[in-house]
Length: 154
Image (cartoon, rainbow, N blue to C red; front, top):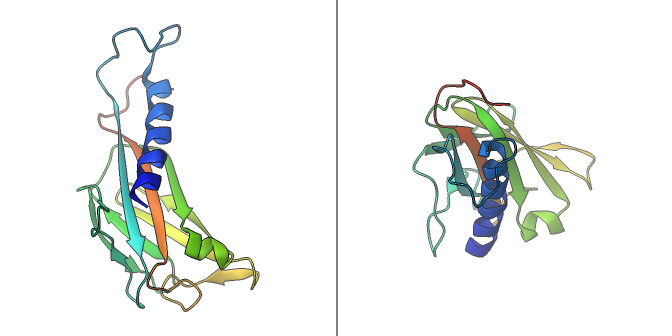
């Protein structure tokens, strides 16, 4: 699982590097002052209360402050505020994939809303519901965000 997180972070990191390099620059040129950062976290669903997974080599960015479930059943991932979002991904683990569960993010500046969808049931399902819940049910979440106020980006 940790390797999967590192692989996802590497892909997002390379994408962020491509966004930071000026037109005509190559990776061999000295990079400019970093303007973006990558954060990530793993959320597990062992009970009706999701939790941040930080055991067995799993890590979570310190910018993530907590998780909860909204009244409509969406997962809420609370973070420290950022200046702007460049990219966000949610990757379901093998347990959720085998159940036919998909997840997608909607990102704000201090909260990410993750909605779950059951392909088998053809409807959305709750983050605290039995379709998602399980001792090894996880989502891997990655964000790329600005570290400075906007001023010249794309």
